[in-house]
Each structure stands twice: as structure tokens, then as C-alpha cells.
Image 1 (cartoon, rainbow, N blue to C red):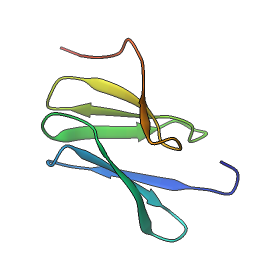
Image 2: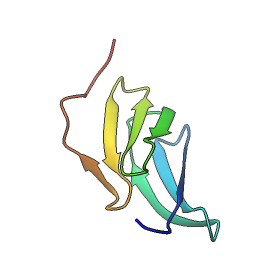
Image 3: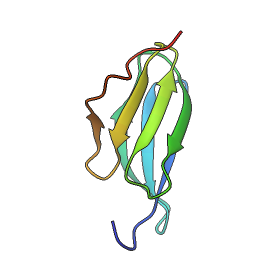
Image 4: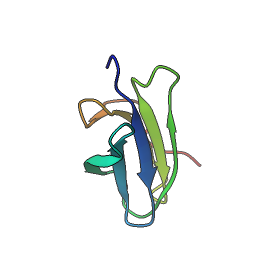
Length: 77
């Protein structure tokens, strides 16, 4: 989104938090994984983010719509 910026955080409670970087206020909390969220990354233009968790799943998200994007990337060894 033009002029918008988000920050992504997560932890042992399995939730992924989206923050408005300009106001420093929470935007949304999404249930991401069963178990801890171990890693998160946002792509260069901020249109998608990816998370990995203790449940051995890698999930792709649309942070602006606050939903998981259907993707074949579901688990890793």
C-alpha cells in the first residue's frame, strides 16, 4: 500500500503480529502456527510475508488483507 509500512513480529505464543510502523500501534494479530513462530520475513515490496514454526510448516501471508495465502509450501524437514 502506498505510503504504508508494517513491522512483523511473533514468538512462542504462535501468533504473528502486524504493526503499523508509522504509528507504532498494533494492526492485527493472526494465528500463525501450532507452537512457536520461529522465523518471519517480508519480501522487498512488502506484498507478502512468510513464517516458519514449530509445527514444521512454512506459511505465506498477505499482510495487507491479514490472511494466509493458499500455497503448496506447507511443511519442511
